[in-house]
Length: 507
Image (cartoon, rainbow, N blue to C red; front, side):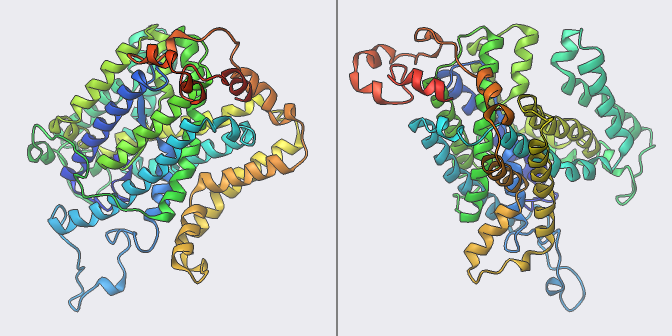
């Protein structure tokens, strides 16, 4: 995800800075995964960078005050000689430029994640699910994938043949040869590796052009290797390493939308993971705790400055179904490995050297899957109903067109208050916010039955089947004390919470 955001953050060409950002992301993913497997939902779910935060960050960074001058050079920036007055890539002035943008994103993530923590600690998840159903989730999630397609195209267009090879490898390994477990477990790594090897062969043979403006130059494997020598072997991430976070009210509002989207997606992942790993159906106190710890993980991301938040990864659940390994100890160790990798600067630098067309091919698959994951929520909805066809179609369409128009016409929003203007621009410039608001409003105001809207089948698919208090979801070390203290029965994240059944029925 940092690779996707580095241009928006104005890091253009600063490969060393990008490697530091990737290492920090690895480190915070490790922290989040370890926390989730011990005091969170306590299921074997790996945490990873969430795409739900990308769109709000893009919207915030597209505002006039944060727009990168390397992308949007105005006539005022040209001096009398006609040259461009911009800092040298990688210089202290350039680093200060992208750090100021990173800090405002980090602060916004920290404030927004505090809401997610509060949402979990107070058990308010069930309240949200009264109004947000499959149609709204479909509109929000599919809009994330649709809105970032241009990014996939920009990376792949540098050498479409290489991008196509990644797509072909991924398709063959994950679909046609899925009977071979090793190929189904590591299709992404194998596809990147083979395409990277192809790029290396084309580079050494001189087939790929050496002209910077030539088509195919971005696929060369020798244009970013300098970062491997510039980066230290060890780089230990720490809070405030890029400067202390600042807060943008508009950024907080935008990332809050991503937070809610991430929460709704994670709830489905909890039930799916429990099913695949052979665990009991998660009770509401565990779900509340999982949401709160995910918020804590996002708070870590903001504090350390990773530029993106974390959420539960559905891909890990698919791996459990293949390997039949559903141990949270394994997940904890995986988190520890991520944490260690985040401290190895050379490893992070290696990811920076991946040719852009390879990433473009990978993004075509992953962004497409994000979109279809959103559309998969329609399985619970009666799509023969003209009402639902109208709500879904209009919501997704407006969610794409309005933000696109606003990106070009910033000056058309003028309330007389600069802060209000920025908030409106960021929110209306966030595709999933616009699509989600339209879908939620239409779905809750246009007449329709619960069954027609998909609530009946959706809640049935995520309804706990009852049973005793689950040992799987008990807290380590302090469980015996919690059972002795009577006041813990009033805390929504404690295993002894008395309103478990009532909240389970709500969810």
